[in-house]
Amino acid sequence: MKTGALLSALLLVSPAAGDGPPLPTLAIGSAAPDFALPGVDGRRHSLGDFASAKVLVVVFTATHCPTAQAYEERIQKLHDDYAGKGVALVAISPNDPLSVRLDELGYTDLGDSLEDMKLRAQERGFTFPFLYDGETEEASRRYGPQATPHVFVFDDQRKLRFAGRIDDGENPAKIKTQDTRNAIEALLAGKPVPVETTKVFGCSIKWSDKRGSVAEGLKEWAAEPVTLSTVNTSALKELAKNATDKPRLINAWATWCGPCVTEFPDLVKIHRMYRGRGLEVVTVSADFPSNKESALKFLKGQQASTKNVILDSDDSYALVDALDKEWPGALPYTILVAPGGKILYRSQGAFDALKLRRAVVGYFGRYYHSVPGGGQ
Image (cartoon, rainbow, N blue to C red):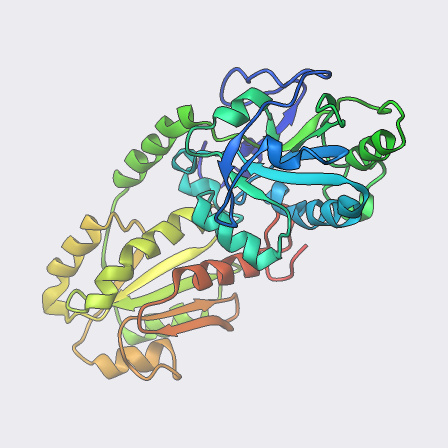
């Protein structure tokens, strides 16, 4: 998958398409496969935990996937609306975090690790069990989800009665058919499910056999050229004005600055995550011109194929004033600049990587049909 090609990461399934032959989806009428998985609540959950439920809803979803994110509130509402009617809902992340490329994370602030799942659950206020199957994927492979999200609804005998989508519209305003709700309502009423299977739309499952794609991406990025250009203060001022139509992340650093060196890998990671959506990352070396070769050597070691510049003089105060009048002067210093020069994020000292990623995603929007700077 090439950088920024989000739609190639999305999957319209019937039965499936994508990076290889799909696993078979559990057949209607089949018994619910057991599982014993860690949850974001610190407990392990198994199928037996939900034995008293009249209906069991198992939702395969993913923290990083923009389509899955679009359904998070609806998943929570399914839980809220039916918990009092004897329906149990459990969400499972089937993705191996080591099989997700950085350029597949352009629409998220978080990946698919259990720790990231905990952060998302806290942020969104999930009250349903959210389980991690990225370690072995054994349970997920028995269910056979084709994309995230993918729903499996079981009756009181734990026989599968519905497998498919939550509804027919990622945009809530355009929903015409509430497939999962229809299945739940039918089972609660003791009636046959009106539609037993549907297509699903979302991100492909990141099975562990996709780790090779991650390695391929790292190899490609490592081969990209790394340069360091000398600029004057006028050029720095123009960078800060950002007269482009895309956001610009500027990081001032130096080879002798410990926090700068420590945070730099996160800066490179952010570049790889969001450049496909148009984020430009610029590093500004505060080293003196006489130390340019050492600065370039550091950048090459970091595989920083960002736009890298160094001031043509020893005047550190000129550098500070050129980038941001509100910068007191300590390194490192990071600003996220919207088109036209408005600063969306500032950090003196080491940046908080999560807050910075959230600022970037906040500008672009979480979903692939979002309007930059204005949400959906």
